[in-house]
Image (cartoon, rainbow, N blue to C red; front, side, top):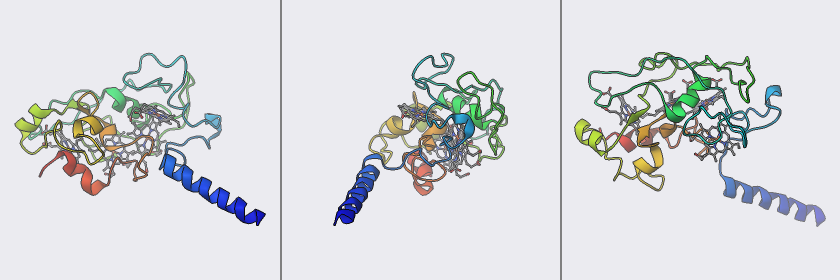
Length: 205
Ligand code: HEC
Ligand code: HEC
Ligand code: HEC
Ligand code: HEC
């Protein structure tokens, strides 16, 4: 009887914790707590509560080293938007994913572990990642000019709000428009929604 109630208690705890937290960074490719260099901490590789890297933009309390690499932005004859150097949180992603800054370079330490597949410096061809333009403004005017885009201000994202609210950062498309760095949805590879719906949330052709 005692074992049974313990079992029921553990199962209901498991159920409640899953329901309350859903999927998370725990156990995802961004969970570095199992490495010796992380000191067992999960958030600290990227964030710190105090003395954060003041040079970083847009992201609260950034603790990771950032990249100084110059990138070749996406261009194409049919692209309407003007794309410049990566900015905002995309620049922070590239501060591991471009392969010039070690994963374990955080909190002022210089590390040695590099990502397996590096992205860039050529963001036109992707270099190991299928290339989608990033760090440019996507607003109602762009949708009118391009004609094959949904209006981000009025189109639903299927995540509860509009495309503008849920997928854009200061009106810009960034890596995080498609990816959830904390694995909140549990959709591989760290996507915000299923790949079949992702493209047509913004594109209408
Ligand atoms: C691999 C790097 C990385 C790790 C590890 C990480 N974060 Fe983040 N976090 C980011 C980035 C990048 C952003 C910027 C927003 C975005 O891109 O979604 C962010 C944004 C946030 C925000 C702002 C609100 C939001 O969700 O956008 C909070 C709060 C946060 N992180 C908390 C945490 C906590 C707590 C942990 C540990 C459990 C953690 N993060 C681990 C990279 C990371
Ligand atoms: C602290 C370093 C670090 C930062 C910052 C970081 N990543 Fe990663 N990310 C990694 C490593 C390491 C992997 C594992 C794969 C590898 O080594 O190439 C990974 C894996 C991924 C994957 C593949 C997941 C899978 O299931 O295969 C995606 C997608 C990804 N990261 C996106 C992002 C995005 C988007 C950001 C910024 C919002 C970001 N990362 C920031 C280090 C980082
Ligand atoms: C328009 C949506 C979109 C944007 C923007 C985007 N990605 Fe991805 N990414 C995907 C999709 C979809 C996949 C899975 C299919 C594939 O690999 O082509 C993926 C795969 C990945 C992978 C794992 C596979 C691999 O090739 O290593 C990583 C890492 C990654 N993205 C990082 C990034 C980073 C960093 C940025 C910003 C510089 C970024 N992504 C921008 C949609 C996007
Ligand atoms: C958050 C919104 C958003 C998502 C999600 C998104 N895109 Fe885009 N994409 C855009 C915008 C905005 C442009 C810029 C179009 C322009 O200016 O002509 C663009 C540009 C492109 C281009 C370059 C077009 C050209 O003329 O060179 C391609 C190809 C593309 N997207 C494919 C995809 C695919 C495939 C997916 C799904 C994996 C996807 N996009 C997901 C918003 C998005």
